[in-house]
Image (cartoon, rainbow, N blue to C red; front, side):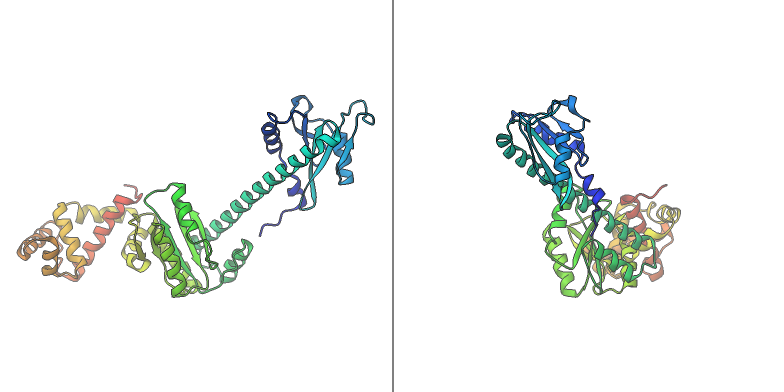
Length: 369
């Protein structure tokens, strides 16, 4: 966890936050309200002319670490009657709330304001901690993506720092929806809340989940929760070693740039061709599409895709295409005329499969022409 130093504690009470509190209470509190920093200087006030002045009552409250009452009889010429209540965060004084008026009357008001400011500071602390944890996890994910030598010890240390002491073996998953709305991302993230061995981090609109102590059953629980929340999921292998985890993370990084959400659950191993295409230079992808795919009509492209998906079976392809087998044979002949590829041959079918995958990438990805 991120340790907060004394100086960081004192910086928690900002002038912006203090003035926000003063402005909120101004319509309902008839007393003059000042909020001072940890040195006693006024940083927020109902009376703007007092900003930046040293408040002696606040200095005394900070020195005594206790409430200071000032009545009209004992008040110095430039000091007003009232009460000054020190504000502590984790037993460190960060400021003072002062309210002008009869001390016995205004002290309850001052204490309510101290509580209000304390709660707002705690809320800001929580947001800062959340941002820090998210940033630390994103840095770890980026390291896994760009480096091939991240050690297991280093990763486990980073996870302990953010309060997630996960242990091997590992699984990595990605989840996304057709919408990048924050509500959808939050819904997917919240769906795995309560699973101790899982941690989530958002990167470029995609949620990544790292699962520690990964077994087939743990992985299945995470996948089921995400699927129930309407996410499209691509899951790396269960029980991965550190080396296997790095490979899966780097494959997923390639895939998510071009993957279209379909609200289904997929194994990463289904996308070996897409990952291969995603890692090749753009000019090769473009050339493959221009030579092999662009000369074909939509009907011929569909026929080629169905044939490849059905182990080059003409009969099965004809059934799925709702046409006669002779029609499929004729189309294969036309494909050979246009591309030089005989899809009944394994090598030529592989070339067509890669070309069709390249075409999908050009449609969904960010390849530069």
